[in-house]
Image (cartoon, rainbow, N blue to C red; front, side):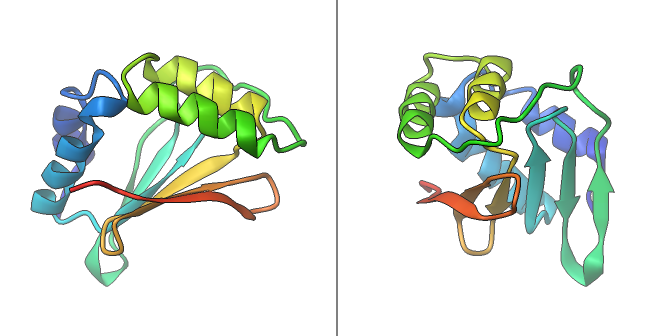
Length: 129
């Protein structure tokens, strides 16, 4: 099974959203099936086969998540981030402002789903190969 240290090593290569597809390929090699990242503090829970999980510590001080979802503005921020215009922490703050509580990467389905505080899917996108 994978370790958080292995995941951190792969994640260290990610500087912007443009680096994300290569990161996903690294996770596939490690045996990660998916993960949830929580916007409020950057904590991530990774999962693999046979209910194996591994979690990270908080990455930053807690930020407040808006209770009001602004899907259109979030999509604008998401595109900017994927184009390499923002760093990870800036994107997390922008997501929080737009009411995004977490995102779930499903490596099997190759999707990324962004959820609000009520666990409703706000945006679902295909992960490029």
